[in-house]
Amino acid sequence: MRSATTAPKVSYYDYIIIGGGTAGCPLAATLSQSYRVLLLERGGSPYGNPNITNLASFGVPLSDTSPASPAQRFISQDGVINSRARVLGGGTCLNAGFYTRASPLYVRDAGWDGRAVNESYEWVERLVAFEPVMRQWQSAVRDGLREIGVLPYNGFTYDHMEGTKVGGTIFDQRGHRHTAADLLQYANSTSITVLLHATVHRISFRVQGGSRPVARGVLFRDASGGLHGAYLRDGPRNEIIVSAGALGSPQLLMLSGIGPKAHLRTHNISVVLDQPLVGQGMSDNPMNAIFVPSPIPVEVSLIQVVGITHSGSYIEAASGENFGRGDPRNYGMFSPKIGQFSKVPPKERTPEALAKAARLMDSLEEAELRGGFILEKIMGPISTGYLELRTRNVNDNPLVTFNYFQEPRDLERCVEGVRMIERVIESKALSPFTYHNMPQELLANLSSRWPANLLPKHVNSATPLEEFCRNTVMTIWHYHGGCQVGRVVDRDYKVIGVDSLRVIDGSTFNYSPGTNPQATVMMLGRYMGLKMLTQRLAAE
Image 1 (cartoon, one colour):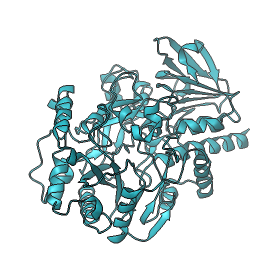
Image 2 (tube, one colour):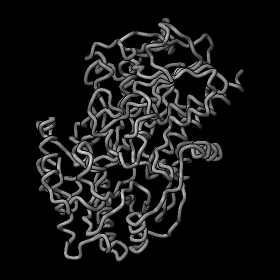
Image 3 (cartoon, rainbow, N blue to C red):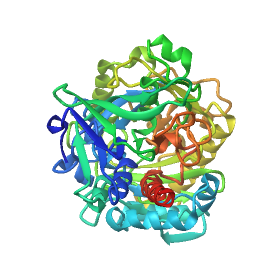
Image 4 (tube, rainbow, N blue to C red):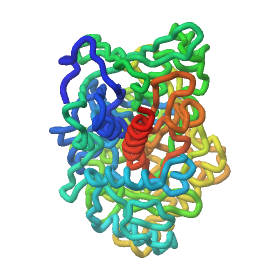
């Protein structure tokens, strides 16, 4: 790794990968085995940063809103506060660590080769996946799920299987995080260049007459503002691959002239290809949680157990000895400091509003902050939205709307999931961690009044649980779409209508894989790298 300030003004490669994230790192490592690869990452290194590495510091990077933060906060037009990665390793440097594969049905629907998929998962797992250390809270949630009938119990497994299971984690036995950046250990160090703080502003194309546009290079700036050009070497099979994430990839295509013609012209962007489906199909799996105050101390834990239910909701849990105290920058997994609780109306999306929410958090009694959360995330989802440019500045977040619960089935799944959470809370297994005189309604009200849930409440929902789902919706950072297979890219992830350009990352997903997507995004980078090498060898 080196700073982009050291890069030459002009350079040439066989493959240029934009985004050193969850997909970009394994993709670059794989392609470098046979070809000269440039990996461009707009953020810095995750190594040497204890707030990324240590499990107990989860949330601290997400609460850091400085320009140097590994997380870049954005607020969707729905009003849910969210985050996107800005660091080598991408979202694997920021997330709650749960590692679990996609279902066989998902693999089949994607048109992937099952054997190659399994080999690619195993390649990832050798470096970054571990069996978690199960302690009291996670064990109680596991046993509670079994007690209420989320069966069978599948033990520890990476596989997606209906019932209750203990999944993998990217935190090792010492509580140290491993990330997609670690997969660069597989790279051929003599043929890969990894540049940090390298922000790509535009992909350049060669357009001759009426022929198809051909991607030829990228323009990027280093941390000092210096402009650099990286170009493909001569050869028909050299390519640029965009792996900038579900916000960054459609944003960069638009900034480069691929997108809805009228929208691009509004921003005075020259149209390379009128592609109205770029930025469409944006989805974020809605998450809702109930906080369970505990009469006894609870260990710090992130996601380790999941209940995969018949109804299409996934039940998971996190806990902390004290979610609300300790480091003043961090309130644990769910807090206004990292934008979790929950939706903020447009007029109140200000630093002052979040500061007010943080002060409210400080005023809560300590007993209200000791315990854990049981959360549910719905599969899919069915509801979709769209992404548009805010400005022509690649550093500015685009405008994104997810339309949470627009489709009734999504809301039904949330209600069913919350009911499941209530049953787990009432289970015998969880009884040591609950106050026996605290009814479910009080727990729901306690969760509803946690900050920064400042929006006017929905009062027209048909049932109290529908109202709870709408009022407390938040993100679990599993948003996807914008460059979907069959709409923007083909089954080989080639951008439809142009040559020498692919998109390989979560922006291509039509719905989220498994209960948590990171394993599949890393797998996809490896899988497509191998497929590209195989196809190229056969063609040459």
